[in-house]
Image (tube, rainbow, N blue to C red; front, side, top):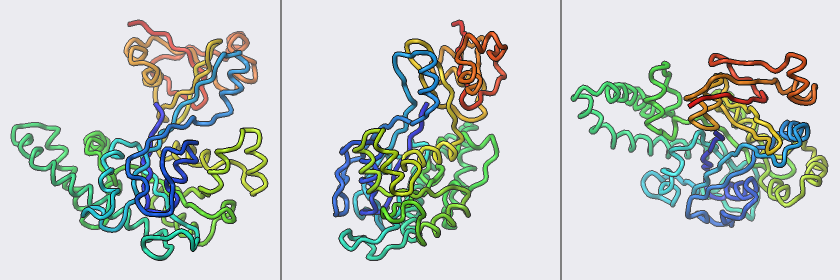
Length: 365
């Protein structure tokens, strides 16, 4: 499992430019006019992880297969989108199944690039986007409620549970708060997730700044960071213009280019790291002569669940997992020495997988 994120924002905030850069494609047309992205665009990128290279070198793997991050970019949202203004509302369905939503906010001045609201104000833009998503959620709930009530009258316990959750969500939305602000107990989390509410998903704010502000941010990014902190999430500062240039460079040239700008890493890395933290994800590895491969799993997952990421049969027929911690694997130079030194462990169904574990599963179906 990787993870996928919906990219939302006002027109002309650099959303499609960022999408193009991050996916190193020109699938989304980036131009200085609203609604230039008229179809949802999907791009996948490899998640960078230096640990794969070290494991592959030790195992002399023929190839390296990283885990994937998927971006879904939709048309710019404007005030009134829920009532048919603009085009973005037509494509909200494309991000209902995303794991998280990334809000791209314009935090730069440029007289050559118009803003539909006339001024630069990322907090206002965030509020407009959030409101349009909340209105879309309210409409979605209204369409569901009648069918759920009929099921509940027939004794459907799951429908009853969803009706109770919907009542709490509607209170939040009516008060101008996103669905993710509703406090849920463990039993409510699954039926809540099935509602596929746009404002029920974890949110990350991406501050798009000029090249000059990429290293340290500006007053606008400080405002967004304060907002993110108050909501228990994160804000990432990137420059879509810089990311566009980075995407054109070789891996060897990227580091020097970024260093000249006072940056230690590409924006993509920051976004991925923040996204993984937001969703509580981590990576484990499988390795052999044919391939070294990264797999994404949620933090706290036990060994059978991690095995199931590879194939459902691995989870159903799980017997045990041969596990080596990443540091031990690299320090000892691979599986043979790790086994000799007692660092290769036989773990059962209750083992909680750790980030960086190198694993081999034994199963029987």
